[in-house]
Every structure is written in C-alpha cells, then in structure tokens.
Image (cartoon, rainbow, N blue to C red; front, side, top):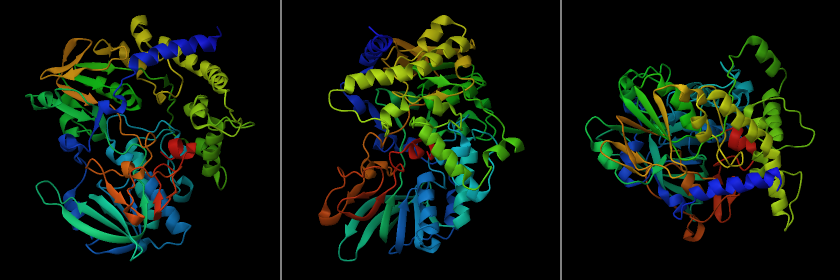
Length: 520
C-alpha cells in the first residue's frame, strides 16, 4: 500500500468512531425555545437604541432592505450605494444585534482575533485609509472597521430588530416584511410591517450558536454557584474583565470546563488558563493547529503591503489563487491558510476536470498533496507539548480541511501547564450534564463554570437563505410568488432565487474563497 492508502485507512477508522446515525440532530441551536435566554444580547444598550431616530416605522416603504449588518451586509450596502447608484437614504440595514459587525459583534470572548491575515480580511482598508495594528487584528478592531466602513457612506440602520416574516406581494410589486423591535428586558417588543422593493438576506455563514443536545443542561444551569456560557455570548460579568482588558478575576479559584477544540477554543483556552484554578478541555476531535506568527504592523511593513493603488484587491486575489493552487501563482501573502493544500479539494478549481470513475484516484492525489502539511502539523504538536501521551491525543487524523484548520501560538503549549487537563473522549464526546458538572468517559467532572465552544449552525451545509437569517425562532416563514415556500429554494453561490423576485441572497459572497475565508 502507498503512504496515501495507509493514511486513508487510518483516517477512515477515526471517522467511523465519530459517525452518528442522528447526524446533525445531535445539536440544538439558540433559536430553540428552551435556549432563547442563552441567546440574549449582553452587549446592547437599549437606552441608546431608544434614543436614536429609527428609520423604519410601521408602514414604511423602502427601496432596499438588507437583513444582516455584518461584513456581508455592510459590503452589500456599500456596493449598492457606491456602484449601483442607490441613495443611502433609500437603503436600510436591519439586524437583531445592537450594532454593526455580525460575527464580530457577537463574538467577544477572550482572545478573539482574525486567523486570516487582516490586511486581506478587513474590508475596504484602502478606501478608509485604516492601518490594522497587527497582522491578525483582534475582534474589537475588526468590529470597529465595520463601523468605520458604515460611517463612510452612512446607510440607515435599525438595530435590535428581528425580521419574522417575508412575503412577495404581486399587486404592489413589493416584499412585505414583518419584524419585531426589542425594546429591552421586561418590555413588549414593537411589531412593524414594512415594504421593500428589493430584499437582501445577509445572515452569514454561521448564523446562530449551537450546543450538543444532551441531558441535564437545565440541571447544571439551575444548580447554585454554577454558570454556563457559549463563547458566542461571552458574559464578562461572570468572568470579570472586558474584551479589551480580559482580566478574568472572577475565575480565580474556579474550575472551568471547555467543551470543544475548534477555532474558538484554540483562542479561548490560553486566556482562561491564566486565571482559572483548573481547566478541563473536553475533546471529541482534535484540530490541526498551525503557527499564527502574530506581528505588530510597522510603518515599514505597511509600506511594503500598501504599495500601490488597488493593493488590497490584488492581495486578496493572490490569497484566493494560492489557496486554489492556480498554476503559476506566487504566494505573496505567506499566510497559514495559503499553506493548507487540502482546501482546493473541497471547493475545487479550474485546473482539472474529474471524470466519472476517477474519484478514487483523485482522492489519493488530494491526500498526497495534503500529506506534507498534515505531517508538519502533527510534528508541531510533538515540538510544543512535552508529555508524549497528551501530544498523541492532540494529533488529528483526517484530511486537512475535514475540520477547519486553526492557527495559534500558545494553545498547544497550554497543555504543558499542570492545571490544564485534556479530557480526550476518543470521538465519543461529552455524554451528559449533571448538577455538579459534566460526564465524559463514564466519569463526572465537577465544574464551577462551563464554557461551550461548540460552534454554530452552518449555512454551507444547507444554503437556504431562510436558515442563514439570524432570528430567535425555529424557522422563518418566507414565501415568494404564488405563495411558494422558500424552505427548499436555495441560491447557488449567493445570488437571485428562481421565482423569488427582487430577492438577493448574499449569505456568503458565494463559493469563492474570498467570501468564505477573506471576507468572513
């Protein structure tokens, strides 16, 4: 057998451990009624929102309504104003969050930062003249850039507002959109119905947090002195500190459990470990963790990067082409992502057409292309983690993009600390919650705080736009011409939808890597 064939056999064995007949049904997301209290906005100032003049009133009629004010929504609004000739006054962004930013509004956990080079990722650096402070900016800096872009063309925005129903009206040639505006705790939400000529959904790729569907969560949450939070709704009142000054003094003397070992947990663990008495990390599947190589942006660095007009688009295009393994491309960015060869196996490229019957040969070729990087990542674990037993458990055995790669300079070394314990479940995962903590590997682990770094729903898996619009209900009732249900209508790579007039799905800037990786 070849090296690739041996590796595929090992990969298959590890995969089979993790297969579940229930598939995605093992997850419950924050749109479900039993978890809506965990989905509350901890960062909004309702008083500030109430003091602002809201652009939408009951009965309003606008030319363009964009549902979502993250990077996708802001960039679509910018293009509508600067390229399509839409006036700022004729366009409204609506979002249930209290401000711009999307994922960067909600994710304020300790250590949150961009793991794609910020010179590519942050939108419109050239147009705004902003210079990122670091090569990989922190979450608050990215959120501030979204706000900066919005200020530049000044679109109307209505925050704390959730759309609940969308229906095309043939007689008026308008979308009829109903929504609820959150007035704050203890107050009745305000109901609005508005009309719009063009409806754009920009709910993002990962619209809402999800957690494992296990027994006992309510028991743990209601137990005295216990606290649960999802990383996408980090509660700084619980931990102490803030996003800009993450001094988690309330974790002193506490035992903290982290479920998950993906891109978020990789960033969270080193910071929590600085403050907690003990940290348990519950692992179902380890992640590949490449070096991050963070660096402060110097004047000399910036002069080399921003060296001509159009530099950012050219740099983004180079990162795209490098990750797509386009022939003749020179890797200018030298980013960790540009070294992950397996990405091209997922999104494809124009280099080769795979014919029927060639699938196995193509799979072996992709594994062989991926092997140098995955072997390098496994060697890095041995270099960073002193205990060989722990190092072995942290080694991933799957193709490079089966689980999202991560990049961090201090995650692996955190397992050298005596108060950080890896609980590897060998693919089984945590089994249940109790009044004391969680059960894994038939053992109860007593915790004071449980951090759920368990990810989000994924609109790549099901790209129906109604699923990507972030709303605190199980399903959006969205209808089109002839009352046709949208549930199974899907836009292909983010565009118009057949029989759904004047509706654009901007959920992920399409299948290109610029949308998935570079623009978020």
